[in-house]
Amino acid sequence: MKKYQYNIIGVMSGTSLDGIDLAYVTFYCEGDKWSFEVHCTDTVSYSSQWKEQLKNAIKLDSKQIEVLDERYTVHLATVINQFIKDNSLDNIDAVCSHGHTIFHKPELGYTLQIGNMSVLADLLHQKVVCDFRVQDVLLGGQGAPLVPIGDRLLFSDYAACLNLGGFANVSFENKLGYRLAYDICPVNTLLNEQVSKLGLEYDDKGTLAAKGQVNAGLLAELNALDFYTLSAPKSLGVEFVNTYVQPILNKYSLPVEDFLATLVEHIAVQIAQGIGVEGTEKVLVTGGGAKNDYLIERIKMHAPSIVFDRPIDVIIDFKEAIVFGLLGVLKLRDDVNVLASVTGAKYDHSSGKVYDYFAKNY
Image 1: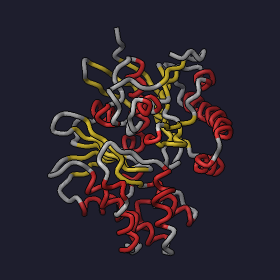
Image 2: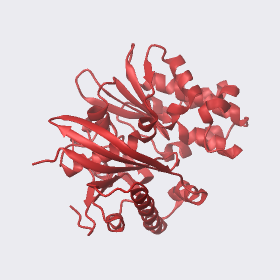
Image 3: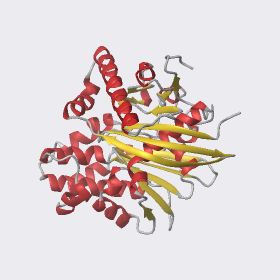
Image 4: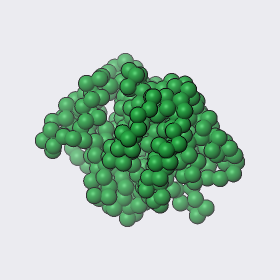
């Protein structure tokens, strides 16, 4: 008989390199209804050295990636163990971890998230559920986005869920009852890179962008990128930024504020066009970009009828960690945690690997 209550640590590291998000959550299942309670959370920032290594990992060869994977797994275990110690956690059913994405090229049949090694369970002395994306890619899917199953089960009161992280992605139910989801455009991956020129980690509330001037030429080139005309399912990775966006930015010599203003306008235009809902629908907005007041203002300007709802901070900041915790629970129950209607895989499936602390692979 399946359990109805699970105490889980959800762990997420996003492409914006803000840090490692951790959330200790209890999930409750009553029939087909899911609910959750967040007990404690933390974000552990990456050191400048880790940021540099993770950012440049895409350039490494296979042997160097293997070494990085081993080192990152130890680092991840250290961070999680400290979180357990700091919060005196002793009743954990599993640690459910996304790892950190290094490569994501589903069109070529591969994706790689480091930190998903079986040794993680040994180092934690906890059951670990991880490596959620590879199976979906092998089944012909995009391997992303994976959060929509959580949107369906935990946030069904909203017509859509919009996440503004390293990339913007949206999830919603269509008229036939199928969950659709896809990446829309880069967000903090671009904005944070610009403010790093000023020695900052992010543009607090979008104050710098608000001071800048939109460059019409740059905006037009960004909006003309072919990705935005593609039909879903579709997903983005740092490869898209490096291959298509950065060469456009390199053609312009602008103050940081003007780059930011133009990028924010580009993001707002793409979200308004790609969000997938119309009228006075209510949309949940999470991720670091939800705290960028200027970005939200510009999105609202381009989609004035939609109600963009920013929830309490713990949901804004830790929604992905919470949902990857749920994905792990669903895997433990052998329930569907990846939707083919979202990723384009051959069929719905229960994805991920389960490692016990003696490294038994289920």
